[in-house]
Length: 65
Image (cartoon, rainbow, N blue to C red):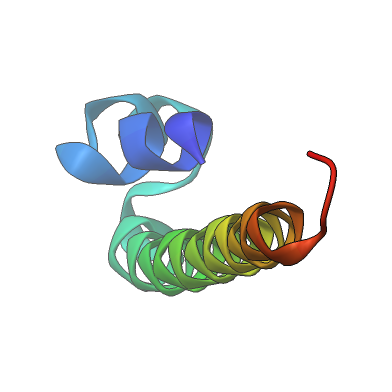
């Protein structure tokens, strides 16, 4: 994600990598990919946090802990 952010932030690096007429479309596609990966990563974070919360609650209700 960081590399996509670097490529799409200002477009300077992207201009060095692709032809001038392709910079705008490639930048749009990379921005969409970056945002999709951010949503995907956020979802995994929330799922992991929810699993940790369930384990914590189960530890509170089990006797002897």
